[in-house]
Length: 349
Length: 273
Image (cartoon, rainbow over all chains, first blue to last red; front, side):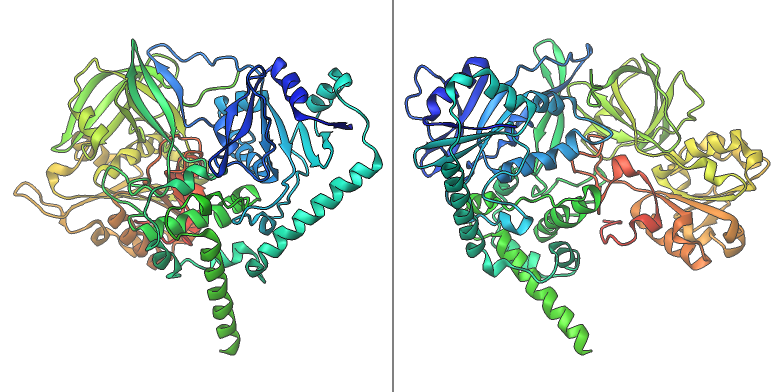
């Protein structure tokens, strides 16, 4: 795989957009959100310093989609290749998590798989850290290690582009005239940048260093009061599950469209009161604290048991999105302290 | 092309049987071949309205049609209860695991059921009596709130009482004048010497409260956690272990269940909630 240099982003993005639909991060207020790239009107191309506000999961797992029709069965439509620029390491790892559920499982989700096969991923290094970033707790980094087609690193005089897949390599080979070779000095600059931001990330989260695994902490919190106490800070807006790049619960509902019946698939949230309720009235998670606990158990225990990885990438979006004081880092820290105390108490006994 | 598990196949309700004041059985004929194993469930769709999970109550050996016994308990079931013969429906599935019939061979099978929980049990029972010689015995202990609340009355009070190899006892919470059987919850007709515990498998299906106390009784009799099979009721929706509504600990009831051994799930606190 090749690594090449380009001094400006626009010609590169124009070349991508010539081949397929391209979505790029755009600064809206304080945040970056994705919008469709139009080469003829786009004059300023932005390189997002940190992850976008809304996760990239929407490109693979749309908020709402048609899943089935009757009486005539739904024909699965062909998906055209499309590109998304601006994903960070946390986003790439969240796609790895979604792949486990929707693509690598014995039951594949055909809609996800079709989009996944056609997405062209252009990731980028983080040039700084967000206040709420804690990806290092999950072995995340300020730059991508894999899972991209092309990765872009911003340096003083331009950008270093690295291919991470055959598709990405093919793109570089098909657009030779756009790129130049990378001098060693620029690679060194890239590596210094990466080390600097990585260091910031770790400095930012020193308080969150746990002496044991998160799994052990969370699994032992089954009877903890922390969830009920913290739930007093939760206004049940469900924003945390919407912006989470790994949350993937959905709701199937039936409706009537023009001349046929449709089954729709729509994002759902385990924070919703009736999420797990059955028709007979039973509801294992009636109490908000229990729903929050379930969310933590799912992310740090159950998913790990099932798929071998945590269902959290530490992107901190849930922290940013929360309109109140609910903070996943605080909950984890409190649980961890409680676990430590419990362990010490057991030793003294 | 990938299979679309969200796509139902078309079917039709061809007959409706009143089982009890709140329970009806619907005979559904799928338009395409549809096979299931006893204990697996299907998502039954009222087109344009919604779908809900049910375990068929008929024998999987009947490949032409399937019976689904439904209690009027929620939004979809209330609407299903208003349907007439001829109603078009959608069927997705079958989903999840079935009862491990082959593991039951040579054993006594101790079936404890209550209320509409007899629906999956009927399918299991019909499957077992088809191969009755392969099992040491089938011991049934069923309960209902009142005699009227028993479903499958014709066969339950009739032919099922006299099948060689089957030992059947019934109980009601409240008797009426015609009832001369046991009165009391289902645990009152469970006895240590009903089966040879060491060579038995127990199957429990019914309302959560009944399952909880039946389970305690079985454990008291000495059943091992791995020999108690529980049919779990959670909010199964997608059927393929993705949408998250039916999680029970690390399990998706729709994909890893609905039948679990007690040993699989006992560490999770929310089993009966």
